Image (tube, rainbow, N blue to C red; front, side):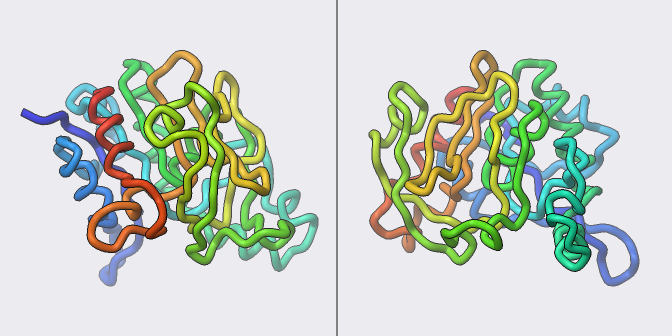
Length: 240
């Protein structure tokens, strides 16, 4: 039997006033191709039970992590601009934060493997005391939010370097980024403009990437010149 991997998704209102859960099937397909059995968790109160049941946790991409989770405020992140602060707040999802931070805490307690992608990368960083920047393209000279492809440089001995080598191309679909690594989190890859592209915990089986490896596989990989993202999911399932 394959390893059971919890895959988090977004939590959003439905047409009848309740909440619904959804996740991009690309994450599920990538894990299945790597030998995992992906499941979508649906109840924050069962975080401990999920962590007992599953072999690993995948934190996926999506909305911004609320700045209270990393000791900041919308006003400070917006430089005092009320309109910008309002827009930053609109991009957050506190219900999703609640579920994912609870799940991460339970998996870390049990020292079970965790992988973060995009938002998941930023959430892991916040959970370990790091700092994020919301909507960084508005003050950053490089664009990362429109699906561009770019090269990153991986640190020697890191997971990414072992799988793909020192330099390779990835995609970029993010408006937020990590700008200070959390405690015991090692920066293991950066883009040419310095953006943090990967983190690994020094002692726990916890790692994350800013790019989307689930889109770097299949019939139409993005970017076309990048490596096969399936290898990263195979590594993760192997950890589990």
